Image (cartoon, rainbow, N blue to C red; front, side):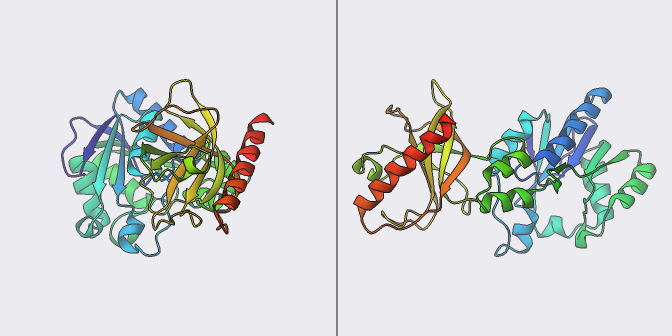
Length: 307
């Protein structure tokens, strides 16, 4: 997948395009992308996505913006996995936010991205003040020579698939419900770095994984499946949080203990899939109590994979 930063450079060819934040890439997003790629294949044109960084809600109200489900890298990887040919990464700033709906259509969709066929979700709004809607796009398409197609919402277990629904399920510890909305287990990527070796002192070697989520949508102790290592995927138990019992940190970290595994994996880039929540993170009176609890967590996580 080709990635271009900015939305003002002129595309090399006409495009079949969709637009959105695509945070988490849930079933609704994936249905939209399936239609996008099928339409692009029939037209003989690239399947393109226009997405934003930062998330518009982070720009307008950073203090109240929800936690991201996926980092930019994770989002781009998921888009590529679903067959997108080109991703246009638009820097969402004051200048872009001030574009009227008409300016967005003329300058971005037609002038820069050369849209031939546009597919958007049923709740898509655009332009300053969110004044633009599907009707305005359709009228502009008839006038300027591109087709506009709407995509209905996708439901799962009677619930509309949305980033908010996924986020709510994760925060409630309902990982199976989140996985159904996503079409896959929720996961976080990161690189293994050196830590303070507390896990080794407790008798449980852990991989300290540097993550870019400042506010991950879930916290606690989990049974996980890890890919990115030879012989994988590997099962394990993970703690994602602030380590209140041992050298508390101010930014959440992800620590994973892999079962029956002791190789040196510093520098490896891993994907950690969260399968079952075992408990919330808690503070223990001393390291002995923490060690006892970790042993219990390991046993509980192992049992999850023996069901």
